Image (cartoon, rainbow, N blue to C red; front, side):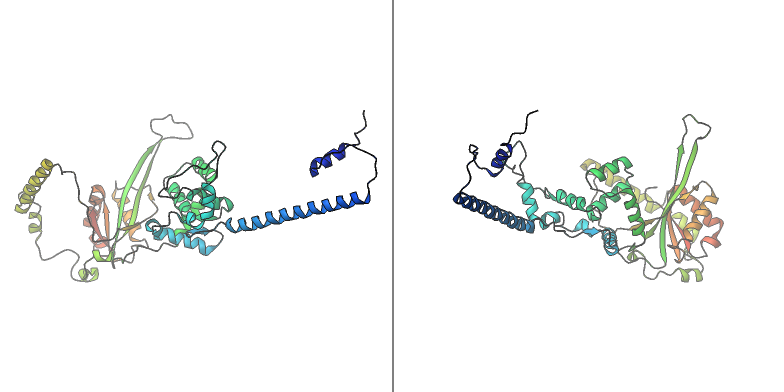
Length: 400
């Protein structure tokens, strides 16, 4: 094996320092040459220090711009107060109607937007010209940068989209893919816990509610599971039954001012005594003059609208009442309206609920079958449902 070349380190040093290699000689250096070498080294050192100072100054200048500024409606989940603030903002819904907040990340970080706009790819040598969009083009990019730096910082859009995923039962593998690849949603467990915490901070309806009168709606649901398939020893076909119900917050302005159920019960009940039953039944007779006139008027009106081509057009209805708010309760499983026993159980559940047990009366609405069962139960046991608070007032659904 050959010995290492004695001049190889010298070539490496020349290549590193940028000097030109000279023929190797054994001539000793003079004092003047040593002085020139030292001065050259000092010059290179001073030049390197100057370049380093310039780079550090440029970095300090750039650092002032490379600050990720956080906008409003961004919450850190480590703080309890910020978590409550997110829940309150979701309940209020103000972020949906507030204009100018759709580009808040872009507005707070103009330098980053300029950087993204001037980036070039490998195929083009100049940044493409981009048209202005309703939502700024790099709004989602900066939002995802914030999420990528800390998963505990949650923009309100991310929380809303997570709740939408939960509402529509998005499959877990789709949910996990979106959460990991885009960071546009939070995890399923985080979303479920947020909903549980939000229930405890329910602010109630944003309008004054009626005093003494509450309302509820209910309907049954039944599904056959496993029918028409091959049954095994472990599994067999079954019927899934439940009744869904919700409390309705009635606006105060929808109830007449002198409404007093207690006074009505003291005076003989909630039914009118100044009209005979026969006179009341005549109002529903097929030969009643008012009914016949109304039928003729509606018939001619709809024929004219059909000729004019406006039969199916509907005008904008301006309701005098605010949008009604509901509170959905847990379903009542294994109960329908097919028997009076089920109806009694459901009525007791509604009347004993914290949302209704202190009211004077409950208006309960449902479909045709529910309405019929309620009427029958009131007639069978008026003492329990008509003379004991809360009094039951059946209501037939508009689309029944």
